[in-house]
Length: 250
Image: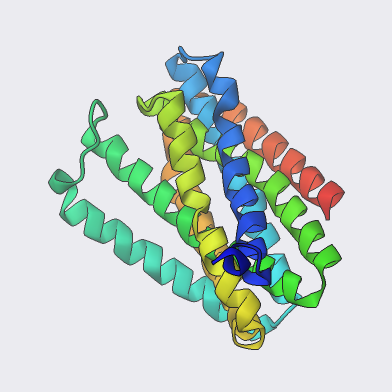
């Protein structure tokens, strides 16, 4: 039993767990800024849109470096999945409710958390595949993903908290969305060739679903509460910052 906890597979799990916990850091600012007006709700949606757009294109670009067609197929599957999921939730909207949050907002929260959770599977595979190369590469990729997860946690919190979720719950949902990373890292480490082959499809899937969510849900909501020029400026600014952030840690 002692050998199991200190085995290479267990060490990969521990490193990947750090990336999941890092996502919760994105909720920390909301412990200090709690009361948001409708105008700030619109800006929050715009910031979340920019962060998610940059993250989605980053995932797609990473997938293209592995395989063009698998990435394109993944984008189309992700698009189909999110459209079908959205229609399913709309059809059974009355069955989806989160305490103290309207049913319409509950549906958006469910979609956001679901998309971010699904996209975490690909990051978990990335961690596992990187550790199969070398410990140094594994630690580097884990650190990069952990840092990258902080603004992703911020994006989730920017959607959840203005809609009535407490900062503690937003932190939990942020961490929850990244739990697939330690779960997927170990099998990807043990069966590297199999997982590496389909990694670009997973990256494309996550990117496609996130792009749809931004334009179908977040930006329309932002435009309801803030002026179009403010939303456009905020989306552009947050997208640029996220791209810069990704470039600096890559």
